[in-house]
Image 1 (cartoon, rainbow, N blue to C red):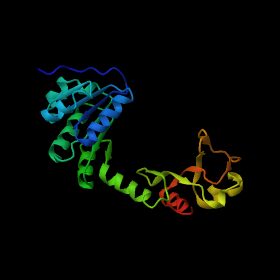
Image 2 (image 1 turned 180 degrees about the horizontal axis):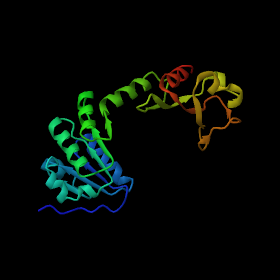
Image 3 (image 1 turned 60 degrees about the horizontal axis):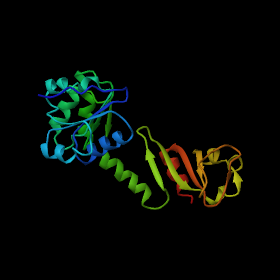
Image 4 (image 1 turned 60 degrees about the vertical axis):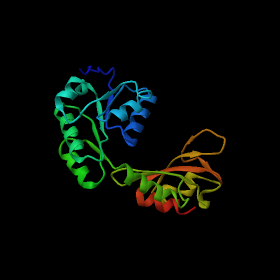
Length: 224
C-alpha cells in the first residue's frame, strides 16, 4: 500500500527519476526548504537516497493510478528526470499532464525526445548534458568566468572589465551604446556586490555582470 503525500505549500515539487540529475535537483530543492516528493522505480536507487531525501517512494510513475494514490496531482511543480527510457519518460509526462499539474519540467537526451515531451504536456524541456557542454565551451577559454544562456538567445555572463572601461563611470565608457550589452552589476575584490548605475566607476580588476543577446555578450567578453 502506498501512502498519500500531501504537499504543504505552493512551491511543492515532485521529482520523478533519481539518477544523477534528478537526485541532484531533489537534494537541492530540499536544501532550499521546498516540500519535495522523490519517486524512482529502482529499489537500489531509493535505498541509496533514503538518508538524503525525507519523502522518498519506490513506484512506477508510468502507472496513473499509482501517481493518483501518491497524491502527485496536488503538487505545484513536477520534474521528470527519466532520461534513458524514452517510453517511461513520455508516459510519465502524459500522466502528470492528465492530472492537471501546471508546471512540468522534463529532462531530454535529444531534440526529438524534447519535442515529444512538449507535445504530451511538458511546459519546459531541459538538456543537461548539451547545456553544460555549451557553458563549459564559453568558460574554457577564460574569457568568461560564468555564463548562463536562456532559450530566447539571451545570456548573462560574469567577465573581467575590459581595459576601455577602467577608470571611467559607465556613462562615459558607454558600454550599452557601443557593445549592446547592459552592465547589471560590479563585483570588486573584498567588497559587496554593486548594482550598476550610470555613475558607477569601473576599476581595473573589477568583474562585470553583463546581460544581452548571446552573441553580443560573447563579443564583449572577448575584449578583455
